[in-house]
Image (cartoon, rainbow, N blue to C red; front, side, top):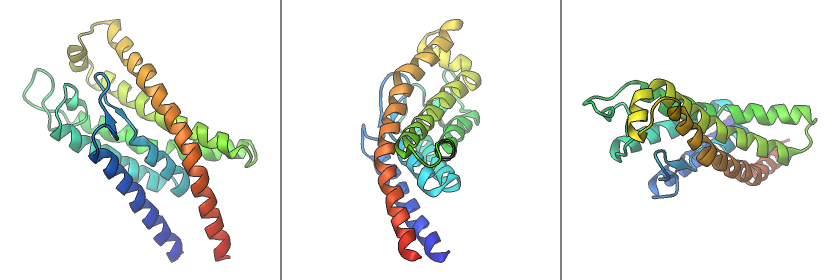
Length: 214
């Protein structure tokens, strides 16, 4: 048990290091495209969720959320206020605690959802079709991020978001859907492919390690 915990700790530190690296390198972890940055930060969280389980996955997702909050505080964009409570809302001089919800909740769930999607697919297909299960889990993790972030922005920062993007009425949610389709779906597909490629290798390494311990 101690060895297993140490192994998990090493992998957790490894994934956390990748998150910090992605966030530190311009245009690698956060890619400015339109009003909301595209991201690759969700990919290590998704893979960790599948390999290490939902608890560690959720922890790393929370780290992703915290990193995005810090970054939004230090690097101001027109929509930084939706991710950082320290950035004033559009047209005001103070931030909102609701930004913490946008920054953390979807990111924590990125580390939870893929695990259960993968396990559910494996159970349904009787532990066959591992590559397809990983692909679907990666896609689910990517969509979890974008769909939840954009909908929380819509419900928690409706007026402020509308003012920034210059939309009104039904056009506001149309703008939300535009981000989901133009950024969210490509991000999810990239996450699915990356998860299928990387997690399959890591799962084999973990399986071989467990066999060697027997």
